Amino acid sequence: MAVFEWQARDRQGNPKKGEIEAENRNQVLAILRRQGLTRIEVKKKPKEIRLFPEKITDKDFAIFFRQLATMINAGLPLVQCFVLAEQSSENKTLVKLLREIRESLEQGNSLGDTLRKYPQYFDQLTCSLIVAGEQGGILDSILLRLTDYKEKSLALRSKIKSALVYPVSIVVIAFLVTAILMIFVIPVFGEMFADFGADLPAPTKMTMAVSDWFVRYWYIVFGLPVLLVLALRWLYKTPGGRYQMDRLLLNLPVLGEVLLKAAVARFCRTFGTLVAAGVPIIQAMDTVAATAGNVLIERAVHDAQEAVSQGKTLAAPLSESGLFPVMVTQMITIGEQTGNLEDMLMKVAEFYEQDVDTAVENMTALMEPFIMVFLGVVIGGLVVSMYLPIFKMASVV
Image (cartoon, rainbow, N blue to C red; front, top):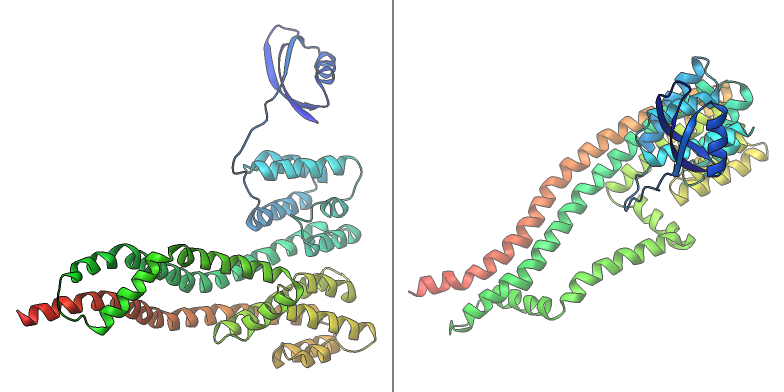
């Protein structure tokens, strides 16, 4: 289907214009003539070329799902809901995606089956929930649950990012400042000290030796960090490498505890959302494992899934994994015994999400003095080592 721009006159001779989707120009002419229009001019709309096409973020989807739930609850047909969503969205990429989904719905396909055709946009959790909502006739309430889940996940992810971005950005800035000083500033001092005549202090000699190495091998200085990042990304894509890196992250001091709490919160909220939507536990655990975000958690969930399929309890294998805190397994045990598993999982998720907030604030406060000391030692050490010969020369004078 292509988009065509047209101009014409109605029966009263008034000018009309607009856009229409059709397979070819002749189809557009036939449609407009049936509407009684004359003096028709049709041309194909040029495609808009974007060097940087708009991305569809999780926030865009959260807003869309909430709008969709509201419209369905108001009694609007599903196709009409997508038409209104297309008209209200300003994201061109999202509009194109919604148009394609609407066309699939008009052909008689279900919403869940249609969304499975776009795995780059809709994960397994989203598709499973929507399929359950369609089968149970509660699509609007399922969409609201999905929206709440996505908003909570976005908030949790932003907290983790804020905990990581601050120290990483400080280290990167310190590295760039140090490299610039070593390559461009220190050599100027070296030329000035060449005619000094006296023996230079040991810190100055050491700094100038490091500066000479930076100048000589600048391509290694700037290329090695880039290669290291690319190597780590490649390693993380391999099964063994991802397992080792996820294990290392969870064992890091301070940060590992925050990441583990975030993973437990994500596990509980995902699992609770699926169970509350009526998804069978065995099927739900497949989705929970796929969205765990950590290989160790994923393997623990698969082990628990196998145990549940054999008639065992859910809490026992999770406890044996050593990853889940005692409170989590105890709450799951109570939920299994009382038949109220989804509520227990949601309560645990809320508790650990709040715990992550506190842990991130404490970690940030703890990092600040260490970062200040690091910057003082690195940058201040360079400045002092360069001024020591000047101080020495002043004392001699």
